[in-house]
Length: 254
Image (cartoon, rainbow, N blue to C red; front, side, top):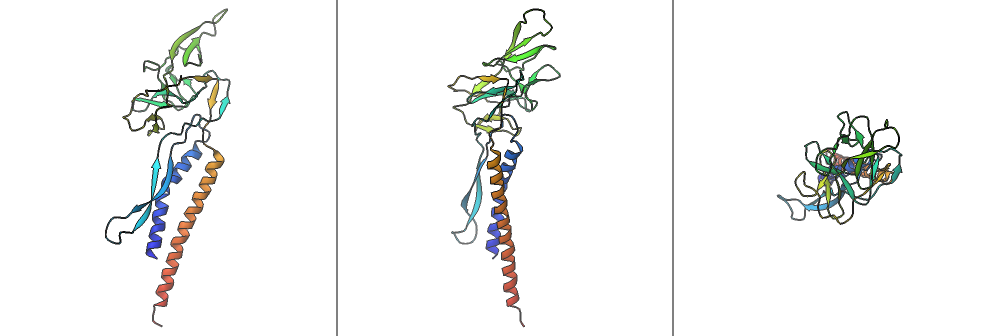
């Protein structure tokens, strides 16, 4: 019975990663541009140490490659909302000051006049420097990533002036993984490495946001299945305890 309880406890512990993955996905159902990444499965692993060679226990196996399946596009009519087409990603400056990537397109101008995402990460231009917007100007973004600013107080026909171009990369030939801040980086490479080798033309759709690619119903069903599995393992531990207690009581002298 001890072996049964031990296996149940190991299974509960190894399912922790899958439960964290599901919770993270459910929390980001409404996050613009959010992509699923974690995939978890169970595998049998041989237990090293004294005992029989046939001893096996379950162990979680995880992968963290970004699932670039597109989310649902949502038209907002806001000039600084952009949705990236195909597998285009946007270059931003991470918390460590190095280049990272995202699909989040809810852009805004911060108090310093720099363009940033809704999460507060500075958007990089083609040269790697942040894109600065002069105060009081209206900003629009063209499909190729060029950023234009115009003076709304200008009399007559308004003239738009290019102030920068978004750093966009095609990730169709590159595997991406998530860093500690939730941004993307090249899988297996050092932080800050740029993406190279894309074959598709990078582009975006203005006045549109891309929704999360997480299916809320699918995640809820998965969470229910994980909850049932947890309850099953706990009941197995309780049952093994009751069997042990019953066996011990039968051996007591009358």
